[in-house]
Amino acid sequence: MATIHKGLRQKPRQKPRSSVLILVLCISAITLFLLFSSPLSTNGFSFSSLTLRNLSKSRNKRQHTLHDKYLYWGSRIDCPGKHCDSCAGLGHQESSLRCALEEAKFLGRTFVMPSRMCINPIHNGKGILHQSNNASSEERWADSSCAMESLYDLELISETVPVILDNSRMWYHVLMTSMKLGARGVAHVEGVSRVELKENNRYSNLLLINRTASPLSWFMECKDRKNRSAVMVPHSFLPSMAAEKLRDAAEKIQAILGDYDAIHVRRGDILKTRKDSHGVERTLHPHLDRDTHPESILCRIKNWVPPGRTLFIASNEKTPGFFSPLAIRYKLAYSSNFSDILNAVIEDNYQLFMVERLVLMGSKTFIKTYKEDDKDLSLTDDPKKNTKNWQIPVYTMDRDEEC
Ligand SMILES: *[C@@H]1O[C@H](CO)[C@@H](O)[C@H](O)[C@H]1NC(C)=O
Ligand SMILES: *[C@@H]1O[C@H](CO)[C@@H](O)[C@H](O)[C@H]1NC(C)=O
Ligand SMILES: *[C@@H]1O[C@H](CO)[C@@H](O)[C@H](O)[C@H]1NC(C)=O
Ligand SMILES: *[C@@H]1O[C@H](CO)[C@@H](O)[C@H](O)[C@H]1NC(C)=O
Ligand SMILES: *[C@@H]1O[C@H](CO)[C@@H](O)[C@H](O)[C@H]1NC(C)=O
Image (cartoon, rainbow, N blue to C red; front, side, top):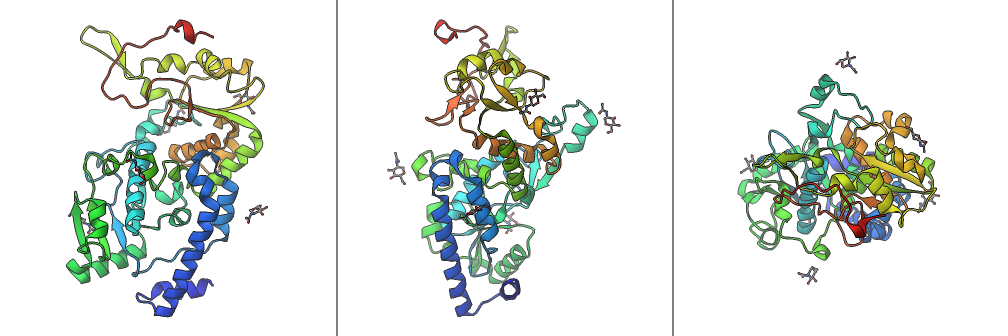
């Protein structure tokens, strides 16, 4: 099998019979994936990682050829634009990548993924695992990046949206061929809608579309697609496409936790305040500090998480023992309880976050910091997105909020 595939891959043009065979294989692979993936697309938090694992082990490696068509958005997420020198956290970069993948799916094209993802130093070096304030270890992470393959399972992604990396031989072939074909092979576009790219045959038949995305960030290209039922690649897609060794680590942790609930407590950078012209501290999330303190959490989750349950806590809070008061009612667990499993596979905080996220997603009851969806349970009622309204932080409880 392996030698046959190797032979096919090295031939730039295939005989019609072998492409029919590949088409049949692809269709059966897609059908198989659709069969197994329906819970994933309807509810990202209830997918079975076991099913995904079976799938990842049984399927054949996807073949990419010059019969496919390609979509390229650039060699770095959110670049060109304001994020070329720095980068946003993993969540923002995933929104951008999701947006690009969605366009590739819409166009029926293979997406050319950046081979590395930039790691924002704010989100690293201040490890949840290694809580030392060693400046030199922070500097070590500054301006660093990690291989896309260390975060995601590209074969698994390719089952939904075919992808290749921009350091692959296939990308080199595509580039060389598109140069040879010139305007008949490649279009460099900016500000052209995806519908136009799909329907106008000036673009639809080209081997390669090279899009320059919004210089603000890639996800701006999806900004007007708020309609949830029109979203082709759900927001839970990339989190569930974690690299195999990360999925394995999460599975081991879940097996030890058994039947558990989970909370994600975002503190850290989002608690920042600034002084207004009268010297009064103001914040974008006025109740967040209060609502993420253990006393408030105990009160808020009491109707959702019965006493005695195992509660997995993922947080960027650095104060040791900050959540200990929750131990009066729950059996607490953190990723630091599993450092023997994690230290063996985790190289940076993005990988750690990917594993933690899988563990959160696998819990029976999952409580987020913010409500992102109507069905979500959350620690605070403050909206997640508030980019303008700086308010005075509130630390007291309203009467009806008291426990
Ligand atoms: C998935 O794997 C598990 C254990 O490895 C096995 O019990 C199960 O039958 C497999 N499911 C499928 C659909 O292959
Ligand atoms: C800080 O890092 C240096 C090496 O970069 C190391 O020698 C030192 O022991 C570290 N200090 C702490 C407190 O971890
Ligand atoms: C894509 O288009 C941009 C802008 O026209 C250009 O600078 C870049 O070199 C192109 N990349 C490829 C791979 O064609
Ligand atoms: C949202 O998208 C779906 C599917 O494309 C469509 O049927 C529906 O009319 C859209 N709703 C709105 C409010 O645009
Ligand atoms: C996790 O570690 C804390 C101490 O850091 C301990 O109190 C707790 O019992 C541990 N939880 C589990 C599930 O082992």
